[in-house]
Length: 326
Image 1 (tube, rainbow, N blue to C red):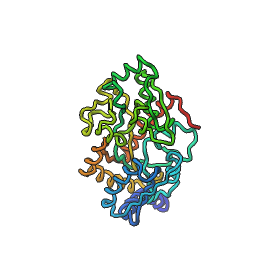
Image 2: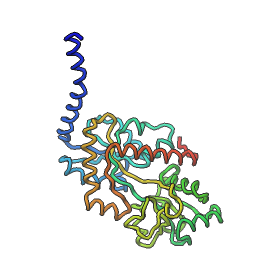
Image 3: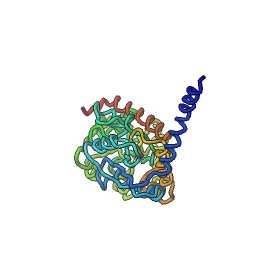
Image 4: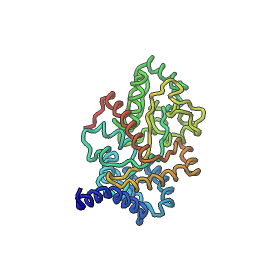
């Protein structure tokens, strides 16, 4: 090899090391200005509240202010699309949810974003237990009794949902498919189904615990089972679906931090560390457990594996239910 070729080869071999050093240096400087996190739902809603809870914990770790920007509309698609098209520099991030990342890609044939291609999963903030909620007039005391009653009297139970293709609807369809219990799903597209559920007009609903736990503890609703591998500390007397013979029925509500595709890995790791520190803080853990949550705080690799498994579950549910919204 000639001297020129040797120098050229050495230069090419050094390129990865230079890139790694540049990425590391960038991460050490990051963040040097405020960070923006897009939440694709209105201010004051459950997803927005959960996002702001972890943001409050991330700010002191990162040493910069974090601005939550609510970009609601089209069931979360407007904000998700805006985040997908943001510069991959770590200063515009996205708080994603089960509905926008794991469900909508399968209920819509066309979306303005690609959940897998356009985002880097940074960290799973936490999961939120879901349950089968029932009005106190429902005689069943657990899921097994409800299944037996629904099979004996098909269509006797009305199950409220937040709309066709929503989390609450598909969680119910999943339950019906897994158990053979036929339920009549009633969509509430623009109003809260809880009004009729609390009044007893609707007998059942599948939903996350944060929206229901106050009424459960107040005796206005009961929960026949919750998701998860073990009982939740805030609901120690409520069995899991797995305990009652449904180990594969695990609709998971979750919230996680994403960055636009192409964001440097070192910045992703820095952000993931901030999420993990916040999610493991004792007061954060206590807060989330009070409403049926399970804080996590994962690495990017762990979150990516979680997303793939969750998307596989929901795509099968959507296919089985035959739901398409366009």
